[in-house]
Image (cartoon, rainbow, N blue to C red; front, side, top):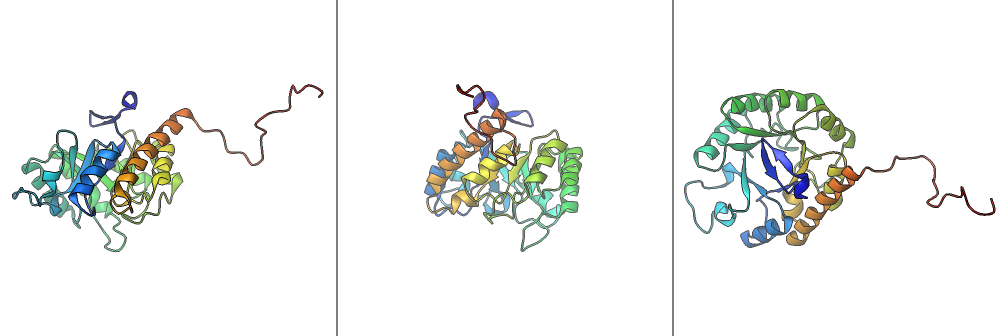
Amino acid sequence: MSSDALILAGREFRSRLIVGTGKYPSFQVMRKAHEASGAEMVTVAVRRVDLGNRGPENLLDHINTSRFFILPNTALCYTADDAVRAARLGREAGLSNWVKLEVIGDEKTLYPDTEALLVATRLLVKEGFIVLPYTTDDVVLAKKLEDAGAAAVMPLGAPIGSGLGIQNRLNIELIREAVKVPVIVDAGVGTASDAALAMELGADGVLMNTAIAQAQHPVKMAGAMKKAVEAGREALLAGRIPRKRYASASSPIDGVIGR
């Protein structure tokens, strides 16, 4: 897949799968799942790690930074100010000037506060951050985020951790058509077929955490997700046949002897 790399802010990633670091039963399982996923980028919630106290109980000490690029995220932030503060903290601690930007607006659905998200995106872009905002599957908002300087847009497939899969296929396709920056489906994936579908709809990548971390066998699921993302991408590039209302014989009778 290296000849079909994902390019984000000028950086090349051979894998189009991005994985998280939360909810695993142990750091050991997390490390094995990361390896099995083939991913090259992992997200780390700035507010969930002790940036000043390294050691065996610190998540950061269980990530092989020579292999995985760390993408800090602003999980648990409910205002633009909080999200901007978390992004700055991650950069000052030496994690990265990249940020998966989350500004949550509703505690039950964990849907983003879209107005605050735009505000935070503009502020962080001006400060030199590479901003990848987690957003709703709203075409207009995706275009506004692109105009604000986002390096990618990351629409949800379904609510975070729900495992419901892609709930609005059309919107993912419309967002892909509407923006020039990469589109990464973020949240809602439950199993490998969901990841493959996201890629077949035109997404440039898929970000997931719960679907792998809380699977009955996380390492096996990570391997399945790797294959699903690759298969979905290859199917998109291959071009599916048109959908038809009626049957079309696999072996046409035209030219058959005796007819």
